Amino acid sequence: MADPDRFDDLFAPFGKIVVRRMFGGEGLYRDNVMFGIVFEERIYFKTDEEGRQAFIAEGCVPFVYPMKKGDITSHNYYALPDRLYDDPDGLAEWARKALAVARHPSAAKTKRKAMKETTVKKKRKTAKKRR
Image 1 (cartoon, rainbow, N blue to C red):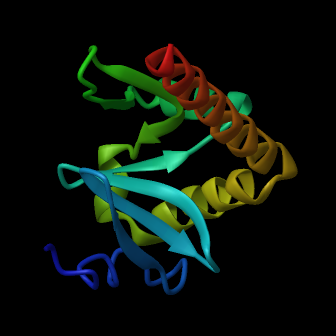
Image 2 (cartoon, rainbow, N blue to C red; image 1 turned 180 degrees about the vertical axis):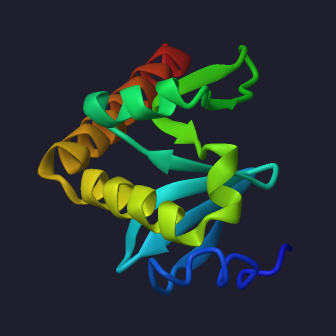
């Protein structure tokens, strides 16, 4: 397991973060709210439609994760601009925006909707197996 404190210097101007293992990567949390993902040592921040344009303007790519049936692209998380790995103050600004998006009620609503859809799909799959 990677050192959970390895980002302390990078995020110092933003404040203390918690790194938790999840699936094939890690989640970045502040106050129990996940605002970022680390996958293959690349940081991705949560964004919304408005913020996405800033990531695109910097040439950043969305988070893509492999699944058995092909890769899935998430337009809710974008790779951190490379320049911010050497700019903790600039990174703190982007991290604050990502945290604000993650805290926004629409983010929770989207997460609940996704979880509900997953549950419905699993129930349908289980029901089909029983037939």
